[in-house]
Length: 78
Image (tube, rainbow, N blue to C red; front, side):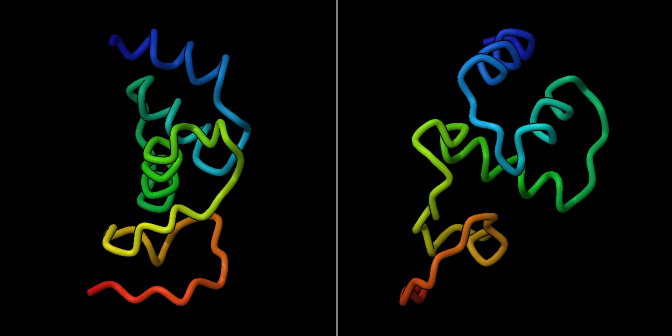
């Protein structure tokens, strides 16, 4: 899928959540900072939050501690 097609899909279906603007900016070839890149990756990984802004519950992810929507989870990566 081309970036332009992906951007169109995100704009049409993706929820307005932390990371959306950063992901679109990245796909447009613009520079984004580290925090924006982390938020954009979480937005991408969570399927553009189309099912709601939920905690990912993936403790083995290296970005887990920096995820945008945290709930008190008693989860410790092994």
